[in-house]
Each structure stands twice: as structure tokens, then as C-alpha cells.
Image 1 (tube, rainbow, N blue to C red):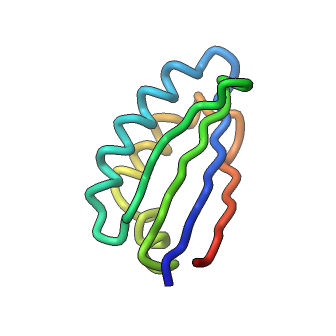
Image 2 (image 1 turned 180 degrees about the vertical axis):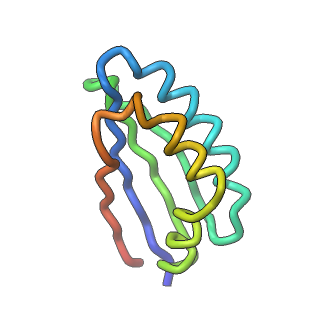
Length: 94
């Protein structure tokens, strides 16, 4: 069953540009994952420190595999000082 995910990612003050650049690079890598149907990044117009990742996965297993990908681990290490906290996930089953 396809799974939608909305991930809200918040940058620390002053880290918005670095985080956005890194997220845009990540988008290109994630889109090559087998279970990824959609992976798009948006930045809030009202709160520019907030980014929303709109994701669609083949299923929950695809999302779990995504979390273990080397590029996700590399992003986590690179962005740790730019993040205000962990991403907030909202999952929707279709």
C-alpha cells in the first residue's frame, strides 16, 4: 500500500541556506531509490526556516529502507549542526 509522508524540517537560525542546499542535493539522490515514487522539497513562505518534504513510497518497507541509505546517513551527519531538532513526520496511508 502506498505511503505518503510529510516531513517538516526546521533549520537553526542562520542555517537556512546551508540546510536548503544540502536538502536539494539529497532530493536528487533519494529520487533514485527503488521504492521512491515522489520526493519534493518546499520552503515555507511564512517561516523560511521551515522546509517540508513531500514523499510518496511504495510501502512502509520502502520508507524504512530509505532511512538506512548511505546518503541519508551522510545527510544526517552533514546537517546535524543546521537542524533545530528532529524532523516531524506525518504519515498517510493511501
